Image (cartoon, rainbow, N blue to C red; front, side, top):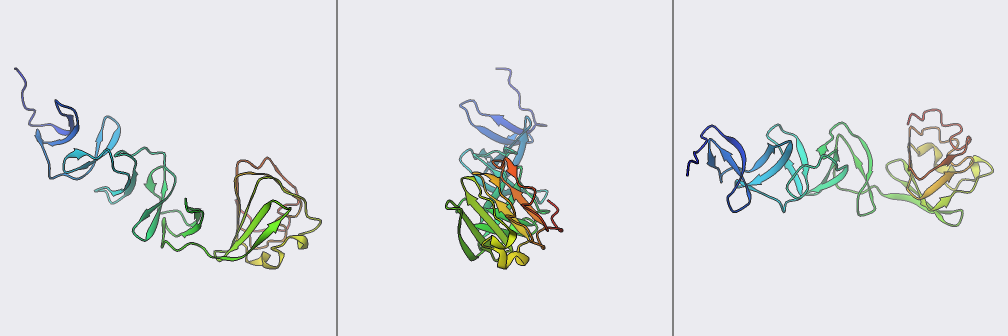
Length: 219
């Protein structure tokens, strides 16, 4: 047997009976827990062993937070991840400290994120209702209007016919959820404080008058 110890090797290595282990200075280190890059993939190691069953958040030595799925960083995850009582907003599996806005979590609630972190309290529904038989609207205390449903929205004859017209000056964000295929006449018209509209990819048509009078709309 001509095998020799590589005392200068630092990184990951496979064991003779399988498994992936962390090696430093040629020695298997059971005192190491953290992230290690190996062949262009980042692995999460616990006590020197590959933590293939771990899914959750990990802070790297560079101070950044990453979302781990089954022991590795996939660089594909976008959304909220719960940490204690807080939520962290991840963009391509990394905490995005530049993001401020509303994000929907898997529990169906929207959470207000500031600099990448939410305090874990969902935005409250101030008022809500239905329209056009199969669509639901919710006005949140985060100055957001959420529209959900399936199919094509009916047109409104004028802006004042919308059920949220009385709150139009409070609305800063509009979110049209997936499943809606068109936005009808005057749907969000005269929402003068509206600065952001998030439209689902399912929407194929938006009426020319849908955002009439929304002079502050940027997105």
